[in-house]
Amino acid sequence: MTGGEERRERMVIRLFGVLAIEDGTRTLGPRDLGGARPKQVLEILLAARGHRVPTDRLAELLWGEELPQNAAGSLQTFVSVLRRHLVSERERARELVSTEAEAYRFATDRVELDLDRFDELLERSAREPTHLARRSLEQALAFVRGELLEDEPYALWAQELRATYQARVLGAHLDAADAALAELDYADALAHTEAATALDRFSERSHRAAMLALYALGRQHEALETYRGFRTRLDEELGLEPTAETRALESTILRQEDIRSLLPRPIRRAQQDPGERSVRLLGRTSELDALERGVRLALEGSFGLLMIEGEAGLGKTRLLDELATSLVDVRVGRAGCSELERHLRYVPLAAALRGALTRAELDAPRLPALRQIVPELTLGEPPQEFAEVDALEALVAVIAGHAPLVLLLDDLQSADSSTLAALGYLQRRCAGIPVALVSAVAPEQTSADHPVRRLQPDTLVRLEPLTAAELAPLGIPDLFESTGGNPRFVTEAIARGSQRELSATLAEALLAQCRAEGAWAYRILVAASVLEQPFEPEPLATLLRADATELTEELERLCERRILRIDGVRFRFRYELVRGVLLASLSPARQRLLRERLDQPDEDINSISTNRAAQSVKG
Image (cartoon, rainbow, N blue to C red; front, side):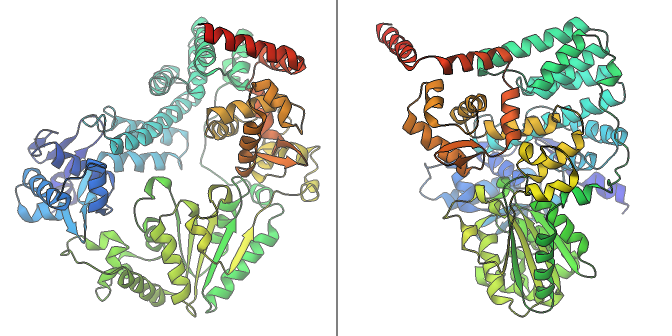
């Protein structure tokens, strides 16, 4: 059988839009699977993307807190009905929807799933030059026939997955718009911005791209109307102003500057800037040396658990990059942990193992319990139940059999509890085996009782902001004062050179980070950006007309989140760059009004508050 014939025989499943299944000449829709529950079981299993879904998790997603008396029996019935309607061949049905120990799994590697192809094309586009990336993005967006799982509009599990892919589709449209602008295809760029705006009315990036496309098409009036409409919407619905970059674009259009000076530049085949490595690793030599020393000791026969700890932007991932490039003649596997996959067991550990070993090396017949950690090994095999300790012992045996090994796990704070427990188990059981497990953790995302805190690393590398002395060789005035020594901000400052504006990507990322703290916290941060630094809570409470004690508690929380920091009895922004971005998001008029409110006597403000309260009671 040829590869083409084999591909034509594979079942095709589409989750974008209404559920659709094509199997040869048969076409099935959401009403052809034996009922609503069997259909929901199928969609939940497909959303797990080949991972096992425990029966208790499946029951929780289907019924919430209103579980039937015999949930397991009901699930067995639903799965039986699903198999019968999905395909007529009983053996193939069981291969597609397999039963495992207290769990079910859908063999997504035996079908063509639109989500898999969409993700593959998106990942490919990130590594390609503009022309090829644009083609990959268009191919990915061709799979988007509508909202994900349209036939399940209210289920919480569907809403969460839908939100994830809405963000990915939005990003794909915006990247495609930028690529089209770079290639001077203004009409296509405008079409993508319109699609992006339909997904997110408050996406500033999509409105900027639309303004550029309209201006390039000679529709200057519409470009300015787009800006004014967006500004009004932000003000009326969110109480915000467009960022400085968006306001600057409006001014540029008003001045009728040359459009080509405003367009994104085409991306050629990526070539590393020879100076990039030294800039990003500036001041990190000792940390990298400590990691390399710890790995060397581990690979000499004394297992090592190494941990890099540092807040976002301090270079944890970059250190992992550099460590990986320094490892020669040793098997290396790497994976990142994700909040989206946190309910799935062993996902990052299995991914790192796949990177270090081949499928043949993992598929050890004498270690069947390994299938509980590496799920694809169960395909085509009868279901078996294994104790947790048997699975971990199988993992120890595989690692011992293929050492020396180095496994790198980024964002470990987002790992599932099974992966974290397995790391502790490996540390105890692999003593004397040449293996290094290197992880990166963001402390601001781990509370004192977080499971990652129970790990006892053999080597702990804590990253701190770069010092003024470490930045001095770069010869850039006020670099430490403006960046706080954060390597991410330092790299941005160097890239900017003499330009005054931050890159749009970083500015929007910092604003998004602040907004993610909640509406009240964001309002506090915006108001605090107007104050002289450091600031006391009382003037800020006056500005916000808030209780000073409650406000202080929130300020302390924002210090724990590494956005602010304590300065004596006062507070200040941890990074001046963050304060600058927030301040730039306010119009000059709003800045002036806030400062005037600060200058009002307390009795005037109290009088205003009392009058407002009286009016409210009277109303």
